[in-house]
Image (cartoon, rainbow, N blue to C red; front, side, top):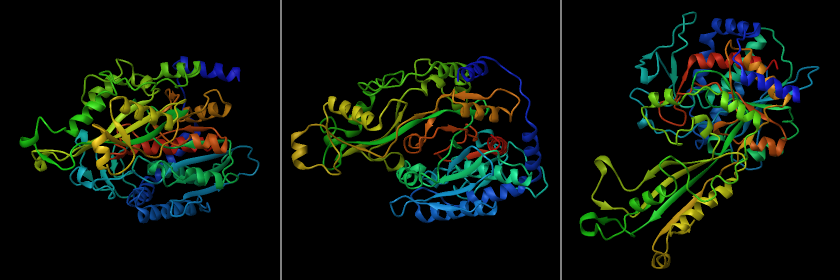
Length: 509
């Protein structure tokens, strides 16, 4: 173990020149000869509506993923939990004679909700469209070229889940197919697990893992989700943040009031909520809620070394995103991702734009997103927020409606409802199998890869630790500017091709 730690330390401390493996070069040649066929299958997957709450669309997507497994000679299985009507996990396995290790490859086939009216003109979430470049770079819609015609790797596909996370599903299965076609044998037993409820918080994933413990036994889960580093380098992530969402609503008058007749007298809930929210963070973005950072598990020495080695991207991103001063008091983005966060996802009170009226609204609502790091507990972190709101003079309830008695008794009333959430997870960087993953990914490129203690985003990976007692490592493939969870989601083709090479290497651990 000490030798492995020293090896990782050396990798983190030096800039090395690497040679791409023969396996990677073979995979690239295969891909170049089959690009059009690969894109046809991927486009078919993208055309299926997969919003997590659309039961019909989710089932059609699950069926498509199962058919993808079947076409590759893998018998698909539907893994359900105990709750009826929940999207199934689609599962398949390849058992390799003589293999001593088993690796499970994970991605999710469900996607975030969409508002088509927010997408750029000409784009529809479930009509995947090829563009000559990103919209920000002036890209134009183009037709998919005929088979055998050159395909520019900088072209992008626009559509919901192009990057999060149908790209992951496709890259994993395309990598296995490439191995079969190239007559390359896996060195470990391979299992494939595609979840259908991740964007709803993986509420029933624990049921699936508990019910199918024996089937899902393995030495490692490799997670394909999230973006590569902002520099474009491939990265290996040893953990993820947890996540829990809150809805915070404050109440004022029982009916909307004329702002002329009642302004300066009737309480304005939008102003009340704005003041309440500003009490939660200072101008540098530090959360002011009591105890918010108290239970954070410190980084290990190896994790600190990895963090220090991550290429700085702050100035690049500020220019790209169009702002000059970031939160965090000057700390780099990579460091800030190791802290718990509080974000306002949305704020609503009455109407704006052409629908704006001269009224004092009856209520104001904010959607809050708490990202958790190792040591935080989702329920405990939510309670800290509730305690803070109470300390600001609010009576807090979870009930949908407010009674007249409550209105008469309490001058400030807030409703706080926590949605399902989960805790953070982190795998030790010095595990032998973790180092094997690092070497596999490094073998696909000639420059350094990035090693991060944790992804800034969230996945329910603590469940694999808790239920299956199995480590997880995340190897993402999407471009960093993919607009995941938002309008105009996209995937750069080169990232898809790089993902194919990465996952072939990982299947040859």
